[in-house]
Length: 225
Image 1 (cartoon, rainbow, N blue to C red):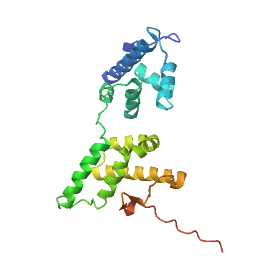
Image 2: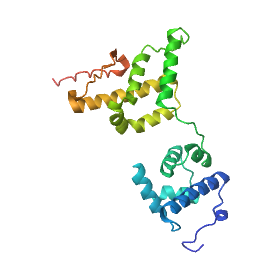
Image 3: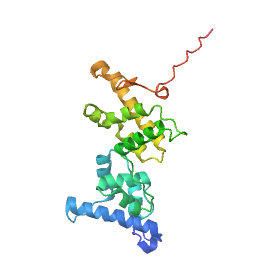
Image 4: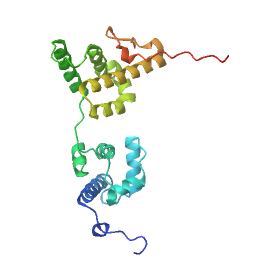
């Protein structure tokens, strides 16, 4: 085969999944070309540079080129990046790439389900679960929507929160993980800014922090004799 010849779809011998993914992503790029540059052609390097700049990631020409030639199907993480960059529905991207998609929960939904679980636990309807720290978890989750903290928290926390909301975790583990992330982030800002903010890491709205949130004390190192 002559050097530099572009393979046709038939020559690539793509299966249905690779072909569907390739055609979908190339279609997104064509739409982007029309929006940005009329009918002039964007090359892969242009697309990669734009994605990296917009998303703050480090995709390579090889990775994106693999999507556009059908050599590779985007991973779930890549599907999320594609959806964010091209501003399309994530479920649509996952479907085109033959990936199972579960819409992430929102903080508000975690709060709602956690409140319901605590009330059921207090009524004895969840005997196999322990929501004794549920009030602290809820108090911490509400900080996420507090105007005083919303910008500071989401700047450093949003990627981790997105992962936690999308993870396939039981409600208690999900709520506790989110509360832990927020507690650590608030503690970080308190360390950096001192008493600039009226916040105690060991309490939220007067509710003592649960034991699992407090890091263990470091054991003293043995001195050399």
